[in-house]
Image 1 (spheres, rainbow, N blue to C red):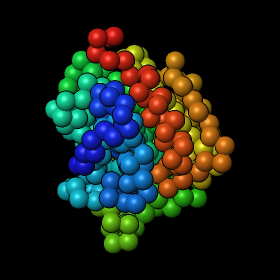
Image 2: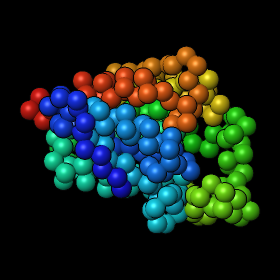
Image 3: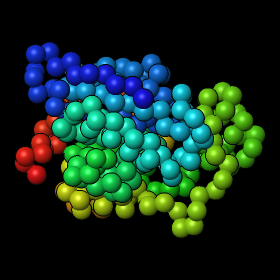
Image 4: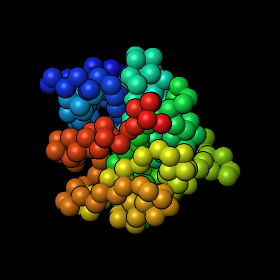
Length: 249
């Protein structure tokens, strides 16, 4: 895990909040595209970034969203131990689904691993989605030994070959609804040019999560590789204004 202390340019309130960042599939906090996001967030608050299992410097194998909420739980708990009074999770693509499931499972900040706000960026609404060419390719790669070898050698991601249990984990739509039922502010950010998950995904997340906020960004593609610094700044400001301090709960 990585911790970047707040750099609020004189704003003393910046040290009050930490942003816990969950990368997408085949990502890492060491990747340049993620580092730019972390640096931008550090202007607005502290930053804790985690390599989820099977990625980067983390051990184990990725379960593509099933067990990864445990990794986010560890990062949120660490942010609390560092002294941050408020914690907002920001997940990208697979990490968005993970952040939603984590919030649904761990609840609000009365618990050490609970959160004060959640941001889903370019996240899926449905498991097993194969409606676009990149997602069909990814499912084929994850589902066979040769594809997993390709992912391991060329994308540096180690995939657990075991299938998900039946029934599968809580769907992102159900996790978004549970997040809002806990009273946690939820922002859903999606681009109208996303090649992985079209606009029915953010629409479904928003429709099921009463009181959530939806931003459809013109020209925005997918996740960390396409997001602009300006959009990261807007997300950080939303999280800072939406995450209530403990005395206001």
